[in-house]
Amino acid sequence: MNYRTLGKTNFQVSEIGLGCWQLGNDFGPVEDSTAREILHTAATHGVTFFDTADVYGGGLSEERIGQWRKSLSEPPYIATKVGRDAALYPDGYSKDGIRKSLQASAKRLGVDVIDLAQLHCVPREVLFAGDILAWMEDLQQEGLIRHFGASVEMIDEALFAAEHPKLATLQVLFNMFRQDAIQSLFPVAEHNNVGIIVRLPLASGLLSGKMTQQHQFDANDHRYYNRDGAAFHVGETFNGIPYETGVALADEVKALLPEGQQLVDVALRWILDQPQVSSVIAGATKESQILRNTQASGLPSLSPELHQTLADFYVKNVRQHIRGGI
Ligand SMILES: NC(=O)c1ccc[n+]([C@@H]2O[C@H](COP(=O)([O-])OP(=O)(O)OC[C@H]3O[C@@H](n4cnc5c(N)ncnc54)[C@H](OP(=O)(O)O)[C@@H]3O)[C@@H](O)[C@H]2O)c1
Image 1: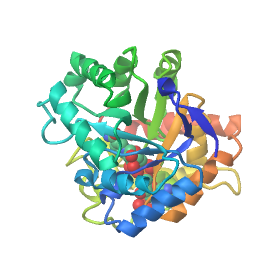
Image 2: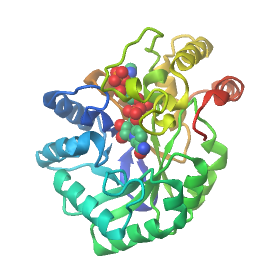
Image 3: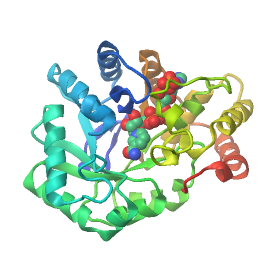
């Protein structure tokens, strides 16, 4: 596993991290024992950066991480998120409310100070009003959080947040099927020393290469109930691409890959080839997926020709299918 500096936090984090949304049972049920195995396997394979949120499973994901963390002599970096619980979202934001949410997260995680607290896709108008970033800075000064960042849906939101002098990280939607940030965001993030955390690296599994038109998802899985954005932002499920289109596009990309290269490895390596990225928080519902995903750190970079092919494919074939904006 290779490690990279995470923006202004100066944390040295594994370039493959672990997204822990699934530990809240939001990708279908995950047993306690499986959750622990997933966390343990990730750590064993060098993962030192874990991303969760207070609302994943109503706190279950944080609780599971907190329980596991207690057993460790060298705890990893844990990033959580604030701003989507019912007390705050969509229009109940206050510094005191955020403090209370973060205190509850700290308790579930079993920490006194949260390593990294990220605003969790707060409404655009709330972000752009600016107070909420100032409150996060105050909470940092109070000692409740070591650093703060923002997880956002849109590039213009990322660009706004990146100008805050204390913002340490940005968590963005970025993958082979959503490439715009390379030109529009990454140079600014680099200039401002803001670490990029990549979510949905596999476009909710589309880029794993295993999805088929016939695949059935569990009714509790967001890939069933939020497929077209019925529950939350459409971009968070299959990257905003209609499922059937996404499967067809993934099949087309497979045909462009050099002999012997698998889509899942190329998708992760493609992200790691972007030097501004600090950590790729791939989700995993099975131990075997962790093994595969962590291996991407040791793979050679993709060839410039393949990068060009994938850039062209995105512009010509994928971009127009992304719903919900970029
Ligand atoms: N608003 C926000 O801030 C926000 C929103 C979304 C996500 N996130 C964060 O980003 C993390 C990652 O996002 P995500 O889990 O939605 O998307 P993802 O990483 O693109 O996709 C994860 C899914 O891909 C499949 N997968 C993973 N590795 C695989 C492998 N090696 N082989 C085959 N399939 C594989 C699994 O699907 P199966 O379960 O079908 O096997 C897994 O559930 C989340 O856990 C969360 O921490 C944040």
